[in-house]
Structures are given as structure tokens and as C-alpha cells.
Length: 364
Ligand SMILES: *Cc1c(COP(=O)(O)O)cnc(C)c1O
View 1 (tube, protein in one colour):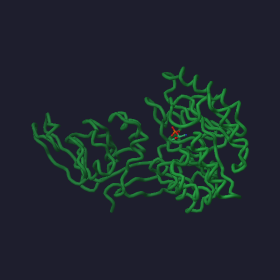
View 2 (tube, protein in one colour; view 1 turned 60 degrees about the vertical axis):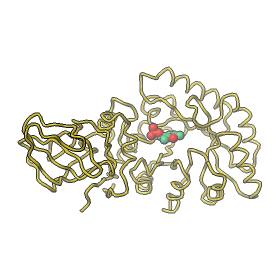
View 3 (cartoon, rainbow, N blue to C red; view 1 turned 90 degrees about the vertical axis):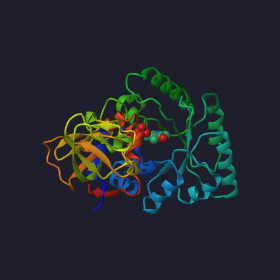
């Protein structure tokens, strides 16, 4: 019996992919499965997405290798390029695409190809449209594309990609329009396909739906922008994190709960001690009053989250026994709400479950 479990609902994942496909009927989907598919399990998710995905995007070489080792043969792109020249051998052997985002990197790729004649590398040209993370600047793109176009070690035509940095619909519309305009100007130098939209672009900005799109968080049923939940867009939560009740205790008025005695009962009540803590990935920064779903109703956290346990106030009436199952986020408790309460984004929470959490996959 596992104390903390994460259920991954592959049918919900497929449902979400179908919803996304309807939003971008004319684009091909590069499914972002970096960071172990946002904590959902990259191989299982990639397989479940197969019908909808042209290919997959990851952040690191290890992540790409994991997919290849599982027998996935579709295109895989490493979004961050290739930080370590020593990795290029594996990149070439496993036929992984990398993004070229600087002249330094371009030189490294060229010298690798010269040292390994006959090898053809798949690359995307990445351009910076206002995030200042990776990519050629606008004043560099003509020269960069000229170098890329003239190099025979790359598979041509080379596509162009950029990343949008603002996901909140209305608030940052002006900045979004600036980024889009920059992309449109730079893409005049492109020789191949364009790839721009992330989840927010897919949902809010149809003008970013180029030949390829890169959905991430929405695949997992989660809203990319604050103040919304996945269900607002017809998406279903894929991850549900649960734990069990260890004990039920009666408290008198004035009893203090947990480390630091930070919550004090203002009336006689009962609490349930749950078997999950921050070492499972439930944030210690969670304030009192955060929702947990238990025996058909929503109860609320009290006291500091411990390493292996946490507390919820269950009042006097709810029937709760040791061994009952509590949902921390997922089907009944939107992870977006939990994230908001603790001052973070759902991306951070779903990538958090630690190695002692048991994953179960519900078939598609
Ligand atoms: C993570 C990432 C995505 C996906 O972003 P979402 O907001 O999860 O849709 C797309 N492109 C790049 C370059 C990324 O790093």
C-alpha cells in the first residue's frame, strides 16, 4: 500500500490532446514532454499522445534518450539546444533535433559535423523575440540564417522557432503583440517551417498558430494563465495526487497543531493527520485553509506541513477513519487553485512529486 500516490489518467490526456487538435486544426503538434512530461511520466504520456503528436520536445539529452530507449522513433527536439559539445555524438546517433540559438553554438555544430563527415544534424533556428532566454536577436538573424543555409551538415530546410513569454490573456496583450511582430519580421529570413505557440498562444492567440505548435501544460489539463483552470477550456486534470489518513484526533479549544504551534483551534474540533508532506512534493509554504478533498467533501489544511505528514480540520461531523483516502490535487481540487494559494504556478507543483511517491497509470 503506497502512502502517497499519483494517478495519471491517460484517457484524460488523450481527451486533452483531442481538444488541442481542435484548437489548432491546421498545425502539427510537437508535444512538450520535458521534465518527465511535467511530472506525469514522459514515456507513458508520449505513447498515449502518439495519435496527435508529430513529435516531442524535451529540455535535456537524458530526456530525449529516455524516449528513444523506450522505442519512440518520432522527431524529438531539445528545446535548450545542446549545452555540452560532448553530447553531440548522442544527439547525432539518436537523431535528435537541437535548437541553434547563438553563433557560438552554430560554430560548435559546424565543427562537430566537419569532424564527423557524412553526419546530418537536424536543427531548428531559435530566435529571441523578447524573453532574453535563448535565440538570435533580430540584428543577428540575417547573418545566422545565411550561415545556416550555406552549411551542408544540417538537414534542410531548417525551421525557425521562438518562445512567447506572456501567458495572461489580457494583461500582457501589448507585449504579446510586440513579440508576435518581432517573430513575423524575423521569420522573413526563415527557410523552413515556423513554430511559435506554446499553451497560451494556442488558447489565446490564433495568430501564433504556425505550421508547428508546442503545447505543454494544457496537455496535462492545466490552465497556462492565472485565474483560470483547465476545465474552463474543456480540459481534464491528468494528475491526481492522493494520500491516506493516518489518524483522527479530537482537539480542545486552544490546542496548537504542528511545528511552531502556528495554528490554534478556536473551538473544539477534530483533525485528520494525513500521510503526505513536503518530502512528497506538497509545498510546506501552503497556508492554513488550503483545500483537500476527503470523503466526498472539501476540508482545509491547518498547521505547517511536515516532511511526511500534514493536518486537515475535519470538524465534528465528517466521518473519517484511518486509511481513508484524501486528494491533495487533481480531479476534485484543481492544482491551479493549490498553486495560487501557495504563491506559485501549477507547473511547479506537478513537477514536484518525489521518488517515494508511487505512480499509477490509468489506461487510455
Ligand atoms: C516549456 C516550453 C513550452 C511549453 O510551454 P507551456 O506553457 O507549458 O505550453 C514550449 N516551448 C518552449 C521553448 C518551452 O520551453
